[in-house]
Length: 341
Image (cartoon, rainbow, N blue to C red; front, side, top):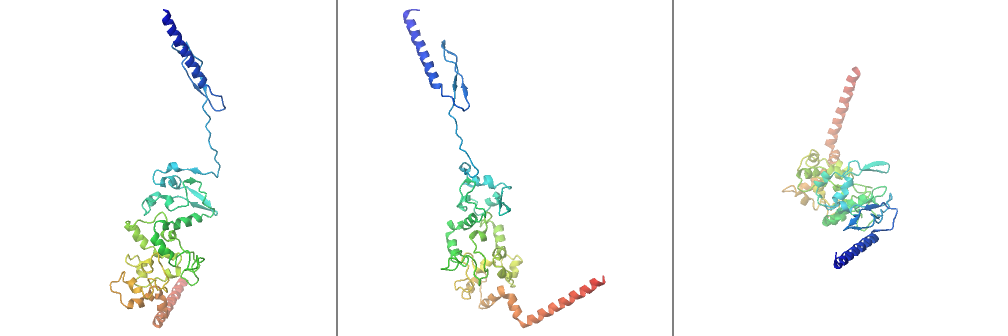
């Protein structure tokens, strides 16, 4: 080996030694209590001995502490307009909570929801006071505040219907100028009953789509159940021959409560703007009857007052008394035979 070759070898050797030393100095980290991993480095390189394997300690990973009252961000579960985030929990049939000493189910049937009119609406479109976090801090012990919010959230999309509703006898603000009347007045057909919110009449997750003919027909026949929750006396007297009796037998062309009284802008019959006021009842009858005459106004009193009119008729009173007497005698006759047995 001549002098030139020796110089080149010496320079390469020095460079390798310096590189190995630099690597060793940068790889060594102050030890900590976190678990360590071993990084293996080749023992030799180009005939040069390097430092022993170096211990590399990664920076410790901190995990935020959680408490029972902490909230958990579930935004990672929202690929489909937010519903999948909620159904992570609420599609579980066993999801319940104890409320006022009773076990209340929080299960939501997603199959029914997907067939409803609101299948394309995210949960927070109606539950506007909820976020995708658990536990839900706004759910109070009695569980009523969030329900009321959801029942009235319809106004955000159905503004025209809500405007009619708030100007009707069902308005939560009560009569015009009286914001304290949140229950039916003593002289109303539902005295002392809370004023209904949208969801009290329309329901929640199962509101049918308008193109679901079967569900819409079933809704039409639910009038007595829906309105009868408050107006028990009025729905109980809906027994006239051509409307109430037919409706109770399931006739599809018999009118539901709202077909005569209106839907969202329901007003007392004494109000001149009411659909059943004597000045406007002909217009209402015309919705079903092609040629309503003046006699229809007189018949209006029979729709809910058939029994009262019959009781006031002296001929009917005699017939009814005779029927009751015969029925009583027949009952006594049956009792005699029972005693003989």
